[in-house]
Length: 302
Length: 310
Image: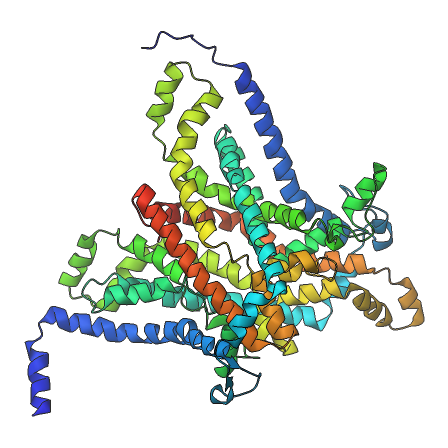
């Protein structure tokens, strides 16, 4: 037992620390969420009033920009493409990576270590953008939907996460199943996968978010206007808001509706951002627990 | 004769080896896949030694040896890009204690639900694409954006082009955006590490009369050091790679000089200047140096802490 000064439980420095902590956290939380609120509020405001300044609440109320933007073909097609690539791409990735991870846990596999390292190395060695681009073209993946879902089918990082998790499943479960005559796929699908649900769900969420946000494959390899993703369409809207605003106004049935259309370039940009981001904003709070779990598992490994 | 030896060979293998071979064959599709998408592109490095023109066949490219590499060494533009890359990576390393500090502050919060809400909100920016980040930044920092409006109200000088078009504050602005996007997410791993620290250490120190700051300085920080150092070393190893997305999205003619990093420049050389071979040479050099850097950093880790990073 120390014979030092006994401090009061609420030290002055404690209070200072708590205050600074609180301020910093509150400020950062606001900074993280306010921009989205601002964009949302702007997007439902009357565009002419919004130009003069929007803070916490919408000024006027107008869904006209939303109407105009959501009627445009390119946005609708892009939504379909992005949803398709997210669903199909994630399914393919999870299926292939899980099967591969399970294979790598099979100690009897010949060349297991070499094969494992073959995949791990890909995380550290990259051929570069141009070689990748040339190879994709050589495989005739340009202007094809497949370029969104095939190259990502196997992900070394997820494989490592899943494999590590699988290795912690007690061998007895597998052994008792094998005694009853279960083969490779029986063990995999009836025992290992159900027991690995947490890590697989985590990887699925990572993969889905990745699919929704990825735009570089679209940018480099896909020019077909029917295969554009939401992200690149958003970029077009952000860059060409002026031109789009003009087009929207001119698209009205008469000169009167053109004059009446209140759509501004800024309001179009705000609506475009909302359209591209609302799915993430909605899904994210539910998916977030999988992300934090994933990081914790990665922390255990690394 | 051969067929018989084959059958004898197969029969002599025990069941275990047979299974091993079967698994290997089953894994072949995956091996072919990773070969096709991750290793075949490496053959593209051959073009770095040729004068490749887009559309040519592999065999048509004219071989020029080390010409591009010699040019690289004397290219002042590459030097400028290298400077930009190292500045952004250096700044990133400089602010790497921030997630640690944030995690420590977060861990002191009472109330599980508040903690969860804060975590959810602060990790959100990590899950939007840089295009959306640009949209958000543009709406706030462009010449008509919120930031300029606030400055006007406060009667402070406003910029004509807004921060998005400001060529001088590029490094700081991009760093702030990067912090905004990654701080919450990067702090999660430290939060996980904090929960792994033995609570008996804290109890014993409190009995000795330690206050919060002392607890943090003498228990939490040393407890987080291993994680921090591992991540720091990995950051150093990846110094030459800043990513392409952020720098492409925020590129404009005003910010060009300072915003062009290696990952962007490689794209620019090929797709804007048509110098495919030169671009591949630069990319190849970057990859090789990164591997050496990573190996070096891994060796340090082994020597100092006793374990490998990868």
